[in-house]
Length: 104
Length: 104
Image 1 (tube, rainbow over the protein chains, first blue to last red):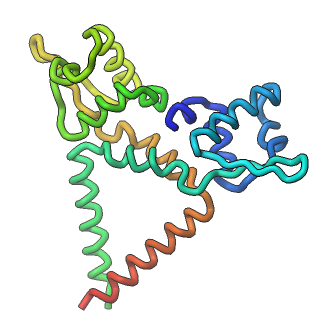
Image 2 (cartoon, rainbow over the protein chains, first blue to last red):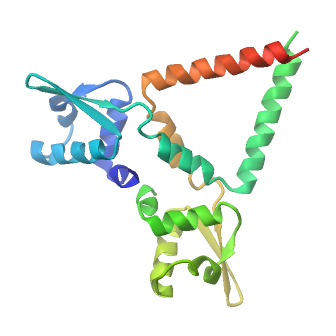
Image 3 (cartoon, rainbow over the protein chains, first blue to last red):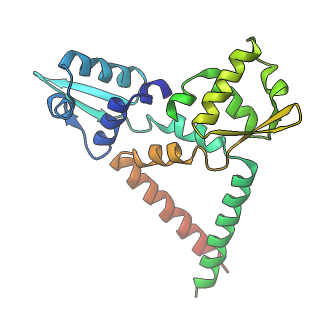
């Protein structure tokens, strides 16, 4: 999964898909590479579970798979240092204190 | 940065350091590789800003750099699909509603 994102083309595809699904030709347009090379990148993202593709007739639509990046996002969240965890708890405490005060 | 984490040895080092800093010999012990190979992995993590090392006499201590993984964590958070964003907002709404109710 993390290897799938260790490439600037594939990260750009993920960023584009974050706003909406897109057909392959539209997705490929900004990149200066052959369609077979681009399809290889898509294949890596699909194998990693980051994107899903659906073919209707001759048109293939690509979308970000909901939750597809969660495993990595959670892993990164778990690698916070003890100091960061303390800062998180302080932040949560301050938000709660503020909410308590602003409740009539 | 993401390339630095696209390797199981380096991810294992990050997981170990998440609990506390460690000296190089202790960090290297679980891995079946030469010290120079291990130092190469550490060098990649240090260049990526994920870890920091400090040498005192002959002992080098390695620690997770606070905030070092934040860029990647934030990027992943931004790539959520519209449906996930809606789910986030619903979750936040439910937490707030619950807090309001439980406030005396």
